Image (cartoon, rainbow, N blue to C red; front, side, top):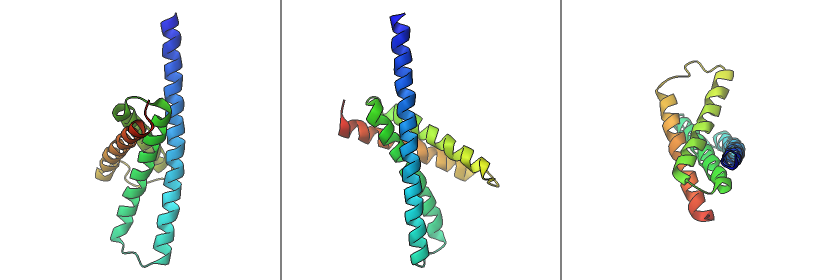
Length: 133
């Protein structure tokens, strides 16, 4: 009985940490989108940089998601960070489906998955190392 209660408390804490991390990841993504939109509006940015801005925005959001999720969880930075990055990727995928992206499942989708997992793991590792236990 006590073991079940501990498991339920840990699961609740984990999901709340992932929810907080995802919220901060969305905030960082929105901020980066605004910054890059301002850069593109002010200066003459070549078309080739647009894809770079998209990838940097996704990586920044996933990094923030992993960082803030692990600020609450405080353990297993690599694995929990990858889980946070995966949750952030699923959110990006769902939002892409809602806005009617033409080809949702493509090579760039796989690239976004890999980048989100790695950035989330990086954010988790940095968070655990900086904030400690």
